[in-house]
Length: 294
Image (cartoon, rainbow, N blue to C red; front, side, top):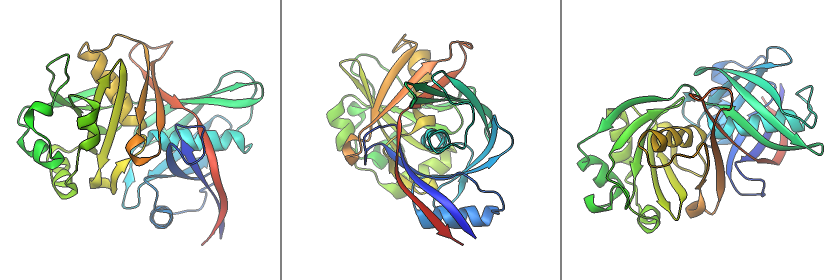
């Protein structure tokens, strides 16, 4: 069996930036075991496997190198950019076209924006935001990140870490400044243990400087030590920032991946049709096109 595969950098239009994802545009006939083996072999943070339902609907499954996850933001952006640019999607023109992905997090829309015959941005609907819990005891967190208690929180406001989900649960961790954010040294074994204890995918650390939000994401529990761009976690962060009255904007750009030399820009906005819905989007670029021989 020969399977077409793409390696796509998501949340950046610059080559070798953003967060790379594997995309299998036609996964018909592949078992779950096949998908996991392929994802492990490709060894990217996520690989998406697509099965067409009809012209507007696509079943998408996401696998890390070690396990399947319910949803992945950057792999969604990579997937629908690939489907659009390689002709798998019909009806692409110079206006927005809406498609639907059927995931383990539910049926979610994906909007493809085009201009002058070129694909501009891909925006995905996030699952309904949920505040799952708050972290009051932070000793384990501090040890796992090798920071001090006075480096936790924002300069402008006292705020606690909370577990938020817009598809996957992540622990939002406010950090005083960008210097501290960049110097975090993760103990991956401790973060894995804490993630299991809290039942979260990972830790999403962030800070705000001069109005710009910067983030780092650590998810060793699911085989990702650090990610260059995290769609679901940044969607959850956007909700967290609005709910805690840190920002009141309907649209922001979050920067991630700089410390990995893979700068990424994640666009987060409130849906125009549903004020309770968060959309996450950005650009993408295909880097490799190839064939997997199974």
